[in-house]
Length: 125
Ligand SMILES: [Mg+2]
Image (tube, rainbow, N blue to C red; front, side):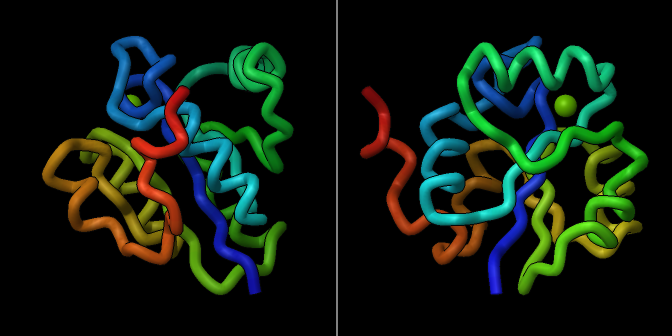
C-alpha cells in the first residue's frame, strides 16, 4: 500500500513564507515514488491550489490545518505523515493519527529512510 505525505507550507517548504528546509524537489520525488502527496496549511485552499499549479505538481489533496482527519478518511495508505515546523502541526497531525515529522535540520535526520528513497540533495537542479 502507498505512503501518504502531507506538507505544511509556511516555515516548511522552501517556497513558504518564511521559507523552510523542504525542497520542492523532495515533493516531486515523493510524487515520483507514487506517494499520495498534498498540503495541509493555514493558507486558504485557493492559495494552496494556485501554489501547486504554479509549480506544476498535481497534488492529491489541499486541506486546512485542522482537516487532516478527512485526508485519512479519503485515502487508504500504509502510513500517514505530516511534515511541518510548529507544535500546531504536531498537535493536529498526531490528533488525526498522522506521524508528525519536524521540518528542521535535527528533525530531518530522524525522518524514516524509507520515506524518501533518494536523498533530497541529489534531486536538486
Ligand atoms: Mg508552518
